[in-house]
Amino acid sequence: MNAPVNPPKLHDCRDAFASTLEQLAAENEMIVAVCNDSVGSSKLGGFKAKFGERLVNVGIAEQNMVGVGAGLANGGRLPFVCGAAPFLTGRSLEQIKADISYSNANVKLVGISSGMAYGELGPTHHSIEDFAWTRVLPNLPVIAPCDRIETAAAVAWAATYSGPCFLRLSRVGVPDLLPEGHRFELGKANLLRQGSDVTLIANGTLTHRIVKAAEILAERGIDARVLNLATVRPIDEEAIIAAARETGAIVTAEEHSIFGGLGSAVAEVVVDNAPVPMKRLGVPGVYAPTGSAEFLLDEYGMSPSAIADAAQALIKRK
Amino acid sequence: MDTTELERIARQIRLRDLQAVFEAGAGHIGGEMSVIDILTALYFRVLNVWPDQPKHPDRDRFVLSKGHTACALYVTLAKRGFIPEEEISTFLQPHSRLNGHPNCNKVPGVETNTGPLGHGLPVAVGMAKAAKLSGAGYHTYVVTGDGEMQEGSNWEAIMAAAQFKLDNLTLIIDHNRFQQGAALAETNDLAPLRPKLEAFGWEVTEIDGNNMGEIVPALERRGSGPHCIVAHTNKGHGISFMQDRVEWHHKVPSKEQYEIALAELSEAL
Image 1 (cartoon, rainbow over the protein chains, first blue to last red):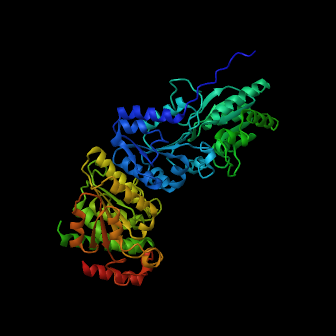
Image 2 (cartoon, each protein chain N blue to C red):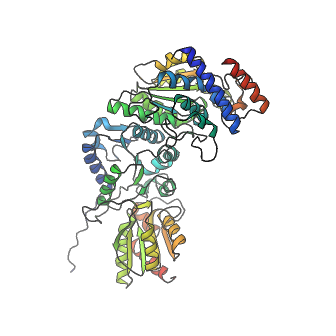
Image 3 (cartoon, chains in turn green, red):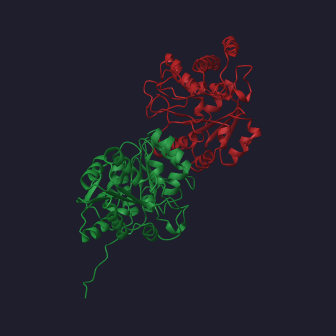
């Protein structure tokens, strides 16, 4: 009889975002939260209770929300502009470009429920284009933390960083992965597992899946390196080039379209510096059917075993 | 500064703007001529600004949302001492900081980048809200074009400004009745603007936006909520053959036309 296995505790990264923001706001009165009728979904209820004056709710008006964020920064505030990722990015993309990125406004954009988090709500609510839309914009770091610890660290970092950024958060519970006390460093990958046969790269919720895929590969005698690459822009070229040269094959997995996202960003570095076989896993340029995030990620070849299979097949092309 | 002096400065700015557009071979001269009186009143009478300290925290904020009329702003900023007057001759030249649309990271006195329409008012709402949060005394002014008011983002901002009770915000709509390709009346006619703004909870003043005697008191008016000035202006104001002609949105005068315009504006000096 097998020993009982306690499933790991899952954490909603929004809670880490909200509690960190509240801690920071208690220390820094410049911090304001801006939202679009998303007090609940952005988990800003606690912030509202403690710092009611500093919660700016613009209603359902994302273009105005981003512009207001830029104006608040001009007036010396430190705004965290929160909204569902598909609407925050897509609906106000030109405001993000002109008012935030081009103006270099000190605004922290926080995209909630990114990727397939709203899986059942359909493609209008899937945010699988946001890496592509944001990572082409100068001055705008694009960051997708993988767990509550990295989320808290990234939020704390954002509050001290002088300039805009885009934080991409899920609402799907994930277990802890990084050690307590982890400090976020912009543009630096975390080496989660050393390996020499192939490198698996992901961020956000997919990091958990590539860690499991590496365990499956180990059982098959394949030594996979695992990189958590929270920062899509600026990207850790050094870690990617080393991975290409030292392992000879790279698999990326992301809760995003395979066009223009993490895999594309990694491929750009690889093709320019150290071309090796690559496989980009993600949503293959389609509108997904209805289903939970977990279901859809499995559906598009990103179960841990499918990622392991993809890596094993890729190694044959080395 | 009194009205007569302001009128004189506005004419000088018009003249320099005309020269700059002619020499650069590009610009948006019609909308520049319509807005110059308002810019002059702001920078030479109304705004608390310190050209030697362009980021002074207590400065009044001004946003030119109709960013395509950047040249008029540059000439005004130069005349007010934010940038060297001789730099106007670099307008649109390679690597000049005087882009076709204003850039806040390059040009002192510019508060936020504009160009795409419907951006300035939301940012101005944020500026005014920031002052409310900190109890700062600065006032925020934003100028939009009337055609620009067709952008939905402006109406999002109009709702927010009323909801936030921003009595420290003044929107000036440069109502010259023409947009790039046609008269407003022929595209998406927003007129009359006043009842629409009032319905959204704004206080509204209607003025002749090319009459300094009406512009200054309207800009200095303070009320209990956000204030909109519907400034009735003439596209191409001050140059006889441009006035109220849609083609002068971004047309450049020929040599002959330039000489005529130069003479008309110089005569007015």
